[in-house]
Length: 64
Image (cartoon, rainbow, N blue to C red; front, side, top):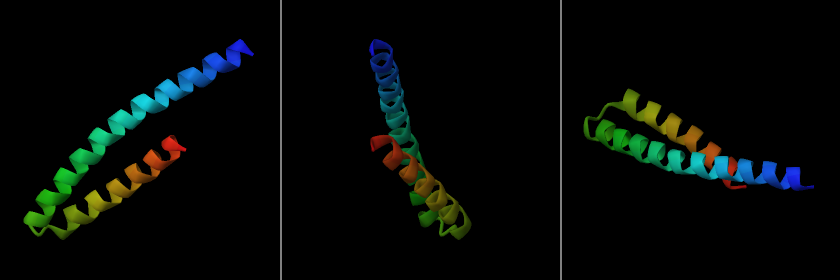
């Protein structure tokens, strides 16, 4: 039973660390999206939106 608790704690810690990194990645992509919108660069804007969607889905999975 103790080993299960250790594994759950490690998974939780790993998820919390990944969430912190995800927040930074989301901020970075949002800044990139803003730049793309200011430049009216539709291709870059679309790429940023796609990446943000991937990050959003990962964030949701980790928080569940």
